[in-house]
Length: 249
Ligand code: APR
Image 1 (spheres, helix red, strand yellow):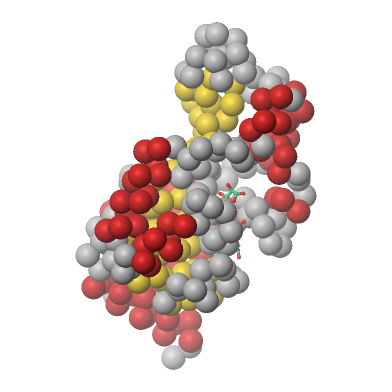
Image 2: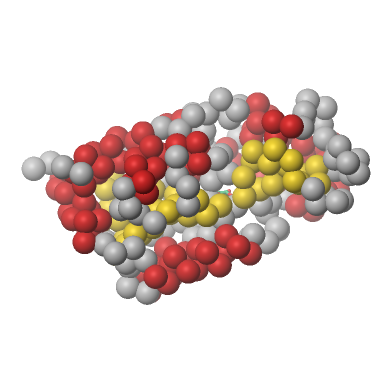
């Protein structure tokens, strides 16, 4: 049997035995939806200066950072749709095979694919928050054609409701992730390099608490040689489709 197929078969057995499995996703799961990763080949940070997502820079020079943020996260990604990997995780949640998804992504594609229990570790680009009155707006209700956009209510600067460098993790997402890491017996890592703390610590915590780690990635990550029990080398969409087929065979 082909090595990848054998690993998928073994991973499927872990899912069928699992009492509480959690998926943990990164930018790699959305690459097949047309959203480039941050690092590695064609990574966003090889093309743009991450300073545009530095909180201090954004608040100090919104007229400089907002046009870049608009270009990267709104103009170019606006039409991204969930791919087979997102739909696979939605099916696994619907069938009770996984409890939910902890995602570092801000693209809302897990929700659009049908996952209900999505822990957004870095927030969600589909919402904007006012830096003055803290009102939160759906991006559909606020036009960001003229940047920087201002709050319809108090006219202060609007900020995308995702985490910038130098910003704290949303408390509810952080504690929900810790709870999942403490109580899950299986973590499925999909498309993450494991290079950004504190998000990247969650799978390590899960491992410390006895969880088995299954990883899907096109290249080894910071997890692979340290905590991964089954490393399935391949594109998230194709591997997830096969994994779901074997689990429900
Ligand atoms: N299928 C599976 N994995 C893939 C695919 C694919 N088609 N394409 C790329 N990958 C993998 C890469 O090999 C890499 O390990 O996805 C990972 C993407 O890594 P990063 O770009 O570092 O993304 P992520 O791990 O989510 O970064 C974490 O960094 O900049 C911050 O806030 C940002 O949430 C992001 C965080």
